[in-house]
Length: 364
Length: 135
Image 1 (cartoon, helix red, strand yellow):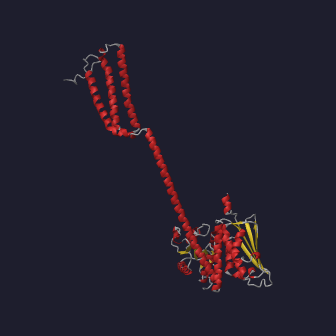
Image 2 (tube, helix red, strand yellow):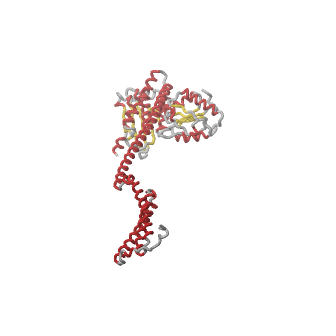
Image 3 (cartoon, chains in turn green, purple):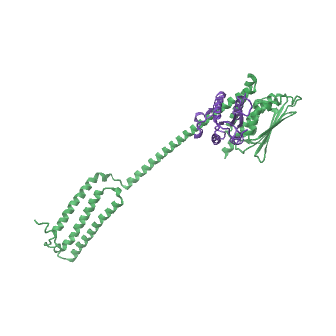
């Protein structure tokens, strides 16, 4: 009845009597119990270590009950050693009862965790998931890349359209200016039509030539022949184009083409192409180690009326203004001309850059 | 045509396309203005700006080879000289903040519209000092 009062009472027979105090059996039990106690004492410590280092794992309740359970088990084994010499069976029974309670809680909390425990993945499963995840990542990366490329393409397309828009408007502005300038320099509709059409066709030939060479350098001879084409249909023997093979950069092609066209137009009206036997020599030489070019346009009327034609045309008209402006600003060079008794003698000189042709670029 | 007097309004024209430059020059000349230039390159525009006085500037935005006129336009603007831009970029021409108030004439240019804009600038100019050296 006074269980608690007698709890430390050791009036029972010590457990050693059961072992008949035989040293071998005593040692066997005592040493084993001590080792079990030490082991059970260390396990909760290691569990606590795990939880402290990995608080993310969770399951704190489970860890607590297991640590308590194992520690309690250890105490009961320690008690086994004690009762070999002291028969405090009330105390050992009480400790066993506490252990029973703790073990019941531990068992319950483990039961509770069964559904979760079966879902815990093995390292192999985790590795599989990781692999799948990296595949998905790769696919997402590809999608993002495709998406970025598409938006870049769209941006480029917009840029090209804006540039095209700008160029079309610019071209329309050029056409309008040519029309207005041609109106200023002609006195009747017939000659307006002739001059205006010729100038627009000149623009179209430049476009065709540049497109044909993919907006890269053009062999100078091709450029010269294209610029004077309208006036050489039946006069091929009357034009001599001479000069070393030279690839002319696209940036200055339009200006040179226009200048030569205006010269040819002038020659058809007032110069060599207007005379029955007239000839035009177009020659070029590079100067200063290829940094400069000189292009000469030499007309020869081959007739007694030479020099009596309206030689002032080139100094007054739109053609001459365009030639001067284009030489000065677009070619960044100089132009000189004079009228020999045999006809117009004009010399263009301007700096040039070495420009590869489209086929040279492709061959690289 | 006005008098070729000292009071003649001087207009700097920058336009890289020679045909258009010639036409702008003639249009302005016929309306009685004195054209400074035309400058067909950025470099040319800079040297005209530094050496000759003018009251109004007509500037092409894209001055060839992708070069923009804005650096010099900003300098002109700082001297309180009225500016109008002439461009094929139209509505998507993006002007720098301080130049946003400048009128933009779209290419192809209607000479009448151009002259109307110039007259507006001329009106603005009357309240501003003449830039650069005086003649």
